[in-house]
Image 1 (tube, rainbow, N blue to C red):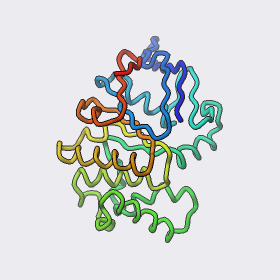
Image 2: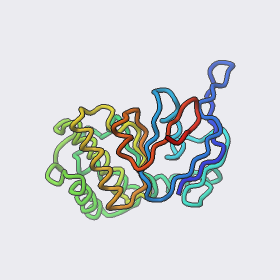
Image 3: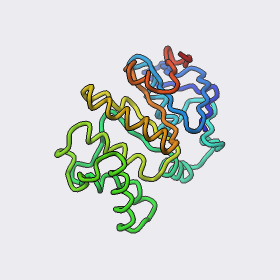
Image 4: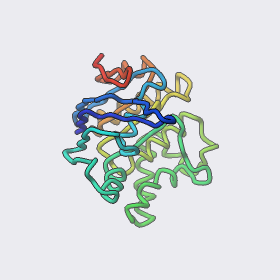
Amino acid sequence: MIQLRQICKSFPLGPLQIEVLKAIDLDIAAGEMVAIRGASGGGKSTLLNIIGLLDAPTSGTYRLGGVDVLQADDDHLSRLRNRQIGCVFQQFFLLPHLSALDNVGLPLLYRNLPPAAIRIEAKKMLERVGLGDRGAQLPNQLSGGQQQRVAIARALVGSPKLLIADEPTGSLDSEAAQGIVDLLISLNRAEHVTILIATHDADVAGQCRRQLTLANGLTFSS
């Protein structure tokens, strides 16, 4: 599903170019659940942002489901992001003035679905993550773990083939964190969603089917 070849990423720092990713080669098959480990600042988020089409590499090639995404135009990339990829972050990025149900339904607004259909799909996904009775509540009325579940429901409401999770348990206590990991494992097994998790937590990584370590801008199988 994911094929990266010789992916490099540099950022300017004054007159210098700081190389964060160095000739990354990576293959991830459909339906895998993969953890990428590494120290903070080691390039995990940069790599996930490239895979999630939130950033572009400095050089290299990236194929997603056979599509050369680095040659795609902006409209095609927008469609891929909306229909193929769901993203979850350490911060929940829920809109505070919207209910949990309306937060989950946001991605479907860009598909021009009728409001009634959006609410039906959002409610189904809230039920799938165990929050079917919390749809009317605002984010500040939910616990951290519940807010992350809403964020996961929002990422999955459009039935993407790929879910990218960047430190999804980083701001949660151990009990809530394990609940999120259990949920992701369940979704991977039941829905066959390809899941890629960036984490520095060995316990989280150890529950994934495959682990990779990112150090000095390079990936290594662990």
